[in-house]
Each structure stands twice: as structure tokens, then as C-alpha cells.
Length: 228
Ligand code: XBP
Ligand code: MG
Image (cartoon, rainbow, N blue to C red; front, side):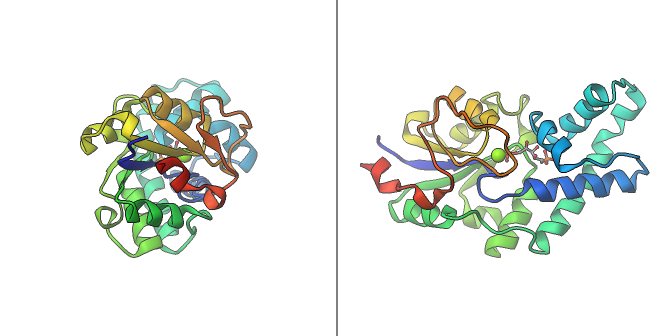
């Protein structure tokens, strides 16, 4: 494999951020006086819908059986509040990198590989994570990022990985993806990428058909074995 770049998912892969997303959603619901409070169990089910705005619409329609166009129209405003809460919590140090992630990034860079992001979340959230974890700007840690609202179709569609490949100017066979969920695996595979899976504690999935390798964390993953 003539590897040239590593493309990382963010939520659940770089760090276990979904607990912070959940807290941010519930804080935003309070801001808007909604009698919504998502439990951990409800959120595990809701995570099957990627994208925070899409997730709130899914809760409204599928969980509450409603279809109120006036409410659906204010979801972007609720999501903007949610993002501000998320950034505040991340900046306060809510998460650390998952085990082994920094070593894979360091080994990749030492081997001359380019590092990129392909995520469903917002660029602002990735920027907050980079500041919190590395004290740096996003582009000082990763060469580039492809983020949720930049593409028409979120994961499991391939769009965001295809955008990352386009911006890198690389072919899928020269890149390796890192993901935590079946939606992410499907997205990366559909874009033609071999994918290393490290399941998130917020995932219900146990089967990852199509994964190149599945590891509990990246501590066990041996990048040189892929480089050879
Ligand atoms: C996981 C997602 C995101 C987050 C919430 O993204 O599906 O929607 O759960 O973030 P990733 P937003 O591809 O990084 O695993 O509210 O910003 O969507
Ligand atoms: Mg993820």
C-alpha cells in the first residue's frame, strides 16, 4: 500500500466527545425552554442519525411522532446554541485524545504521511478540540478538514471522505481512514478507503464488516505494518 495520508474521523475516534455533545444538546434544549432531556440510552439510539440538526429532527418526528414545520424551522438556531455549549465544554477540557491516537499521528508524520480530518460535526467544533488538546489551530495539527455541513449528504454517504480526498489531491488507495462507527465505516468504504475501526463507548455496534482492522483503541494498532 503506497500510503500517503491518514484521514481521521473526529467524534468517537480522536476523542470520546459524544458525551459532551449530549450535554451540549440538553443545555441548548433548556435555552429554548424545550421539555426535552436526552438520556444516555436515548442518545445511543439517536446516534444512528448522523448530524446534530438531523438528529433533532429525527427525535421530533420519529421519537415524538410530530411533524411541526414551525418547530423544524428553528432547529438550526437550537443547533447554533448547542455548538456554543459544546465549544465551551471542550475548551474547559472536557475530553482528552483516545489512547494511541497521538502515537499514530506522530508515527504517520514521521513517516512523511499527510494528516486530514473527515467529520460530520462542524469545523468550529474541530477547531475547539484542536485548541483544547494541542493548543493549536486546526491547520497546525491537520493539513485540512472536510466537515459536516460542507457536503450534501452526511455519513454513511461517502461525501465528506470524497471531499477530503479532493482537497488532498489523493486517490483513495493511497489513504487510510480511522473511524469509530458503522456509519463512518460505510462512508469511508463507499469512498474507496481502507478503514481502521476503534469502536466508541457511545456505539452499540459490534460488527464492522468491511473494516481493514478493528482495535479496542489505537494503542494496539501498528502503523508500520500497514506502511510495509
Ligand atoms: C459524529 C456525528 C456528529 C456529532 C454531533 O460525527 O454524527 O453529528 O454527533 O455533532 P463524526 P454536530 O463523523 O465526527 O463521528 O451536532 O456538530 O453534528
Ligand atoms: Mg465518529
